[in-house]
Image (cartoon, helix red, strand yellow):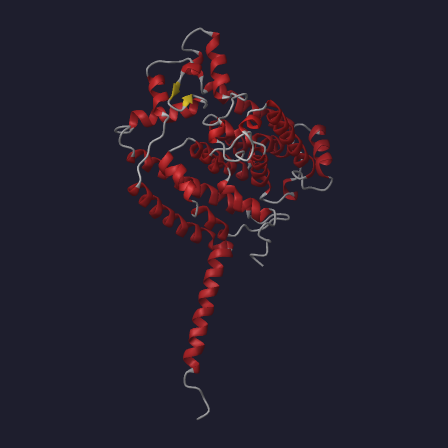
Length: 391
């Protein structure tokens, strides 16, 4: 008895507590059963931090001058402008900020608008959490997307600034887009139809949503067949004509139709060199050159074609098999859904967007919101973090 260490029971108890704590942390970070526990804790932290940001720093966007012209009766889209230049966003953007103008107490008092954008910010976080969770459902060749991937989504100073201080339209478009991704993941005929409606509404806020369109076309063909693809495109196109109807029918002037689409979807618009982030390493002359624009477009189409041919049909027989099945039976899906992992839908959409941004003629600071929430997903999907986290 005299040889026993009286401190050994206490030491063993401490080791047990440490081991239990490590197991708890590991479960909160990696165990799918605790996904929403961790997401909820991060949500509370984001809410508290965002309220602190709003309390400390007020700001206001420059869109209100364009809204004033719209409310004053201007229906020629090419004539609506503000201090930042002409209106280059689709109609739903204008309607949303018009609602802010009418419903908020005063455009000089920015705080109520910041609280609205706080809701957008937190809703976006929850939507992205849902995408990650649904992507990790048990499936053929699938994998769990651990909740530790959500932590980086709470650490971006720029994301908080874009949502809560600058009040840009980019976060609104991305929130609606992420809701469309959830609808696509839920699936079924209604899910894909609702997803196309939401996708078009997001496009009605900002044109950058077109970056996702090549991926969506591939997915529509795979999951809905040729007829379903035509239906989805019809839904998207119809909404794009309905949204700007007040501009078309304001006067019997065919110029208004052309003015809207050439302003809201101006593919030839020249960006200002002083605002570019990704092309500062070249001269302004090279930045503005037509040759660079053509080269970027060619590179964009080439890489999209390569991904469509070799990456986006992960089934036996690959793309050729999918095309053969799709064209032989236009009414049915072109692949067996059971053969693809649950993360296939967001992976195709997010990679299409990243390709588009890689070949963008110019990126500005607020465009950070176009891809920020997708980076942990893409890094983990592409083994950027080794995919050994959950082993």
